[in-house]
Image (cartoon, rainbow, N blue to C red; front, side):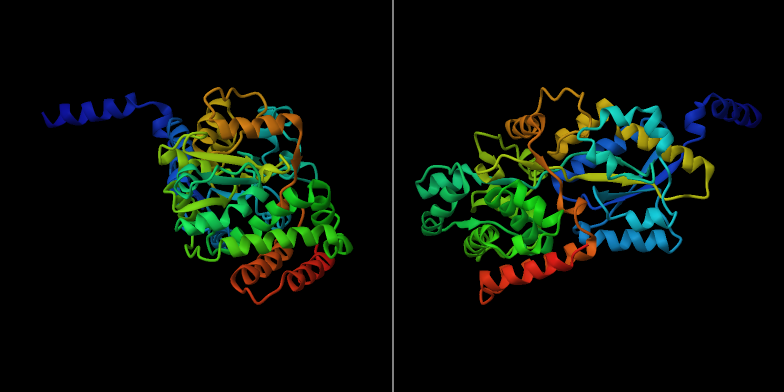
Amino acid sequence: MRIRTRFAAFAACLALPFTAAQAVELEVTHWWTSGGEAAAVAEFAKAFNATGNKWVDGAIAGSGGTARPIMISRITGGDPMAATQFNHGRQAEELVEAGLMRDLTAEAKAGNWANLVHPKSLLDACTLDGKIYCVPVNIHSWQWIWLSHKAFKDAGIAVPTNWDEFVAAGPALEKAGKIPLAMGQQSWQSSGAFNVLMVSIAGPDIYSRVYKDKDAELAAGPEVAKVFKAADDARRLAAKSKVQDWNQATNMVITGQAGGQIMGDWAQGEFQVANQVAGKDYTCLPGLGVNEVISTGGDAFYFPKLDDAAKTKAQGQLASLMMTKEVQVNFNLKKGSLPVRGDVDLASANDCMKKGLGILAKGNIVADVNQLMSPDSLGQVNDLFVEFFNNPSITKEDAQKQFADIVEDAD
């Protein structure tokens, strides 16, 4: 009996698929921990696990500002993960230059990424010296305000259609016991809101000249002064919003405690988890209803070099998988972002996603600030707006002068 049992066990092992026998575990780090984000990243994990390999989730709680230093420290310290999230832009530039990231050019050529990724700037952001070092997985735009139908109904006023109407609705919302503008306390939230105001109030051309061309004279001028006036209004409307995380602020809109939130399209994932319907329970206004433009920010995955042939091969599988049609659709529908492939069918997209796709199709896009300024310069911008939004004694004129100084010295 014992011999037959051992033989049966041996035969069962031989019968296992080759892929199962060669299954490889890859640790993947990211900062997607909210309800909507977790649902989205699970689509990547499910697709990778279906290959017979195993996704080992390395979620880091907090924002990208919290997670990135941890990721970078591990890579530079000799303890790299197999794959890691960064935003589109220059965040991993020094790691690539130091030779710590894997070249994905072969996977990109095999998958025809150059003809699939739209806009082209997303793949350009992954490219250094003609080689491709990351796979862009989505397009995230900051350029939105999310409005609670319940909050405005409770206040007895119509849902605004643009920023000026939203500001004018502030007193009625406050009288009804609502916080007009929900905003978390993390630095990237306040600076992100300012950049949305920059594109919406001053326009895409001025935004580009300030952040891309580093035009300090323009940053100090009257057109940008209008943006600081709007930021001052936003500061006043958000004065009683004391939550910390962005998704906590989104929840205030979902539950009708707040009138609106300036936040990227990843907020859609939270509305979906809460079973809210665009156009019925909430309204989304791209470009704050003023300038219907979206920024082409978002997320990309980099693959640190590993001294392990099996894991290196699995890295290539994962990178290629992330760009497939099915995975692009499943992930982005949950994430609230737009796919980087221009040939996918998103017939099941909600009203807000369809608005974004329409704007993208028209070519009304601007580069994300992460693609235009170095992390050090953006850190100074973040610090300025944390102080501005939390310290009413800082005048809009003083803040504009400090901003212009940062732009002048930016790289």
